[in-house]
Image 1: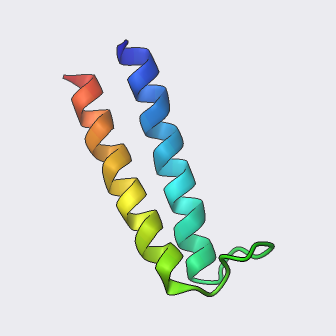
Image 2: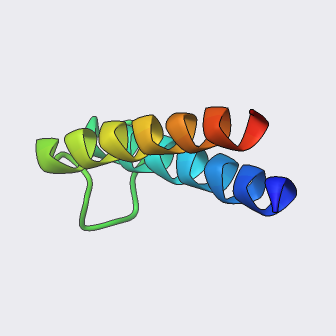
Length: 58
C-alpha cells in the first residue's frame, strides 16, 4: 500500500509540475499554455502530491 501511494504521489507531483510550467508558458503544445488557471491547479496538485507522499512515508 505504501508503494502504491508513493507512486501516485510522485505522479501527482510530476503532473502538477507540468501543468504549472504550461501555465507559465515554459512548456508548449497544449491548450493550457499561458493560462494562469493551470499554474494554480498545478501548484495545488503538487501540494496534494507532497501531502500524500508524507502520509505514505509515515
